Length: 223
Image 1 (spheres, rainbow, N blue to C red):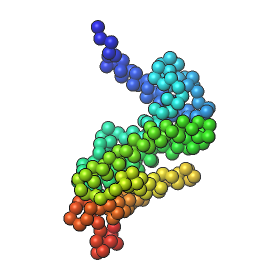
Image 2 (image 1 turned 60 degrees about the horizontal axis):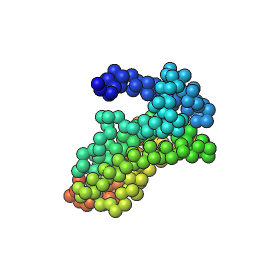
Image 3 (image 1 turned 90 degrees about the horizontal axis):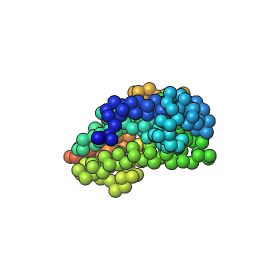
């Protein structure tokens, strides 16, 4: 006799998990971390406390799951771009990053982390270790693959990934922390991504003749 849960039970469990994460996110955003209890989450999600505790035994574990989910890209757009054309690849990565940073709850979750950090430093650790670092590592991995392919020349992959993501987030995301109504239009955000790609091209291009050439003096004004 098998002990594996049936497809039906797996589906029900996943639906309950989604309900819990959705309810918890709303409560965290409305009431803050300290003002949210697991009991309130269970009630809002329409599940028993036992069901909630089975999946998330602590509030910190629940917040970890929310952070992980918030940073996760969709199944269709999470794959690494093909190696060989860094302009195209970094453009794809940059557009994905913009879509990620402009999700409705992303800025609000960061505000919770910042506001609660003195009392709950584990929230910052969750945001960094469960969210930012896995995404950062995926970008670093792409740059490493391009370096191996010979299309870029870079010694410090960590720095290069930080530079690229920073050029985008410093315009698209971080002003929202102080300016709640900061909402650049799509064309402006696309332009920031394009300029970040051109900066990476100018700094790390392997040279003329490659798929990621350094700009010549003739086309410098177009880069």
